[in-house]
Image (cartoon, rainbow over all chains, first blue to last red; front, top):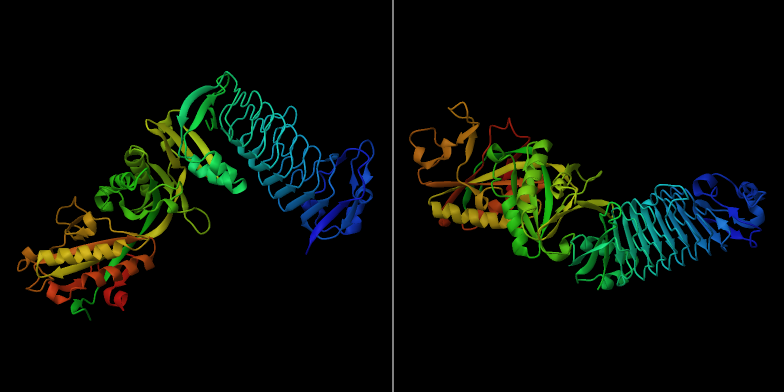
Length: 270
Length: 302
């Protein structure tokens, strides 16, 4: 059975909340029933059928063709199955993801993968600010799973992360890995100002020489810990350049943020 | 029945159900990996006095180990899961944690096809005195414990599986040198096989034992029926020309592993024929009432 496909007819009239459109909730619904579903859009709901052309299929594999930066909450709360977007998405894509795979062949807006706890998100374009971070007022960011951005990420990527793996192939904005509690963040390109600020525990791997770390990080010298031989292959499975960037040589290491717990660490090549 | 002219006695080896785990030790060089493994499996010949029976299963090339360094796989066997956990933790802490450059990994997975979880680095981590850090990589948790040469990397858990301990055979020869040479050949052949270890010194035991003793405190004592110097004094099992008997004990993860190792070992021990001095192959048992696993020699070789 082929994928259930939603093809965007025209740009939406306002911000559309797609968080209710999940494979598990679409199971058992016919094309007509899916078209009748009401989507929150600005001040008045709009029928899904007005925005999307529905091609019936297996909802465990959902394809959204023709993205738009005003489509919010795509695959939020996904617990299984596969959601594929051919185009860009708006805010909160994959928020609270628990399982399954969300693949975005385009850019994604702020709070992508916000507080996700499992599954995988792949953004083939750039991601907005607060990648994996909790919503305003939330205490926990990403708590598991894999969040991989092929392009660059905005400010505060990985904020308040607790567990899981966050990969950025391009550059990361300011305050990357800010206030992380634990987990692993890997940025192949450059990281912006105040990288790792407020970090309690966890590991930040930089593929590019570090510059401008907060003054509350202390250098511990060049060294090559054994766990890298386990971790680098995991990174390289998703982005082969990691093997060469962090290959055989000792890496510079800093510990911090000493303004908080101070058990976090940043690794970068010389 | 004869194998290469050596008589195979119509008897059986009796073995026991045990709990086992495999761990993988890696280090900067094969020498240091082996050093840690030999230390960890030292004083681990018999559960009677050592709490655990352990040995080196194989040396591993860098591409066979989790961290791409030279390694050694070790098998440990105990009578219960608790005994195994206690001994594993103690030996990992005293013999591997202490050994320069080593890292320690589980060699058996948990889960439906694997075994029950067994703590490995789970409590060793407290040696880090608060500076220990964990990393969850591909769903497996590792502990990083700061030590003076950097970090001791240790997987949080291994797994334990049901296993077989005490598979054995006896080599009866006209000279001690002949018995020893036959046993050395058997050990070499058996150690090439996976999933088994020979826990005794060099793989060979000279003090075959029976259950019980005239002394109340002793759970086991010498097997006088096979002691050449007691011939004429006790009910001996030795023909007049037999001057020495040596035993090989094998522990394996499964019944089939032990069976295969016994077959390979007996074949190698008999390779020289009766002219080598090896006259008879026998086996140790307790009448068949104690152990769950029986290995009739003639059936094993058939």
